[in-house]
Length: 459
Image 1: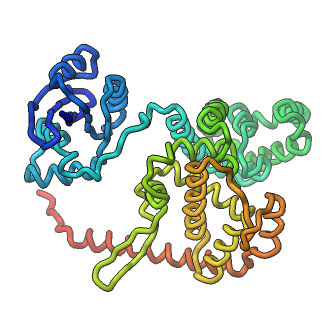
Image 2 (image 1 turned 60 degrees about the horizontal axis):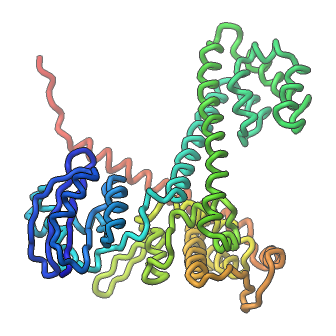
Image 3 (image 1 turned 45 degrees about the horizontal axis):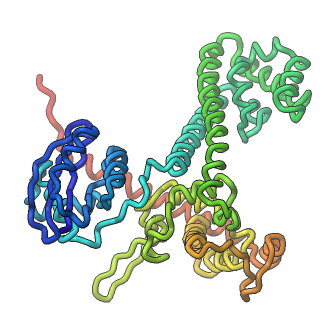
């Protein structure tokens, strides 16, 4: 006898469970339990004694499904997860848009019979995987740091352009440390060039010195001359800059700690360094790609792996029409970001990828981002194939001859460079298209507001 146990997971309230046999006949339903060992044992005791297979069907509700899946797997059950969109569509069909926890549990128990192709075996625990969780946290921290850097850049514009010229447009941890303490122009002038130069030498291992200190002091003097003594509250502005710089500095330190942990986790997950053998992939990107991609053997085909990334084009076909638009972006955003960065570097090393990138840019008129997304899809296909075959990535010339990384770079530099006028033309076309889309959105908003009736103000 085969049992199908449907579990409707709740984050704060009790879960609901329903049990059905392999024909879809309900044995019982409406069992309420929590993520507790005693409640789980009571649920397990309600199952029939003579059972050949227990399949637990659940939706991946936030992270509440992870401990339940781990417990059921320890008891020998097969855990499968169902995409929320598919179960929602089936629920609407069977319930006429009525949602109850009991109905959800019964639907999940019968789902293996109703929609078997919608089941996905939960071979891993998703957020329970430390590598997958770590690279996701790192991506969020990088976004926070970028936000803080943009705010810092905007605040420095108030002081004047000389500060950005003196400190550089590429903000580093030294920049954050300096702005967290010395964002007041009067304080910088009182510090003096000699002491400021020693501070820079101490914190940059003598990469910055008297020249940088002189430029910063000149920027402070220009700010004072521009604003005068009472034109701007320097104390308040320095406090705001110090707050943003402190946030960026703390986030940078957390990113550095995560980088070390991700390297160790990647080494354990991929001891042969197969993902790292791909061109354009470093230690951090390798961990990010493998962590978000997961086990490559779980995909039925390489096309399924491409679809999981969300880099495949969205298609709309009916009758004699077949229209393809931009990528679906329905997959893992963290995986797409890593593949895009790796593809932009790999096209400068792999002649085959460079030849395709050149054809997309020069012959088909694609923009750099669009062409790089296509290269990212090809790179993902090759990395997945290498993982499934336990083979390292080998760079080849367009005729199939294996080449080294240095040889590939030389070939790309010689044959597959994009003319500057082509890049300029693509950028101008992209700017025109984005301006057109923005104008259309503005027109729609204006039309929507004009149709809204004005409510008279009561006297």
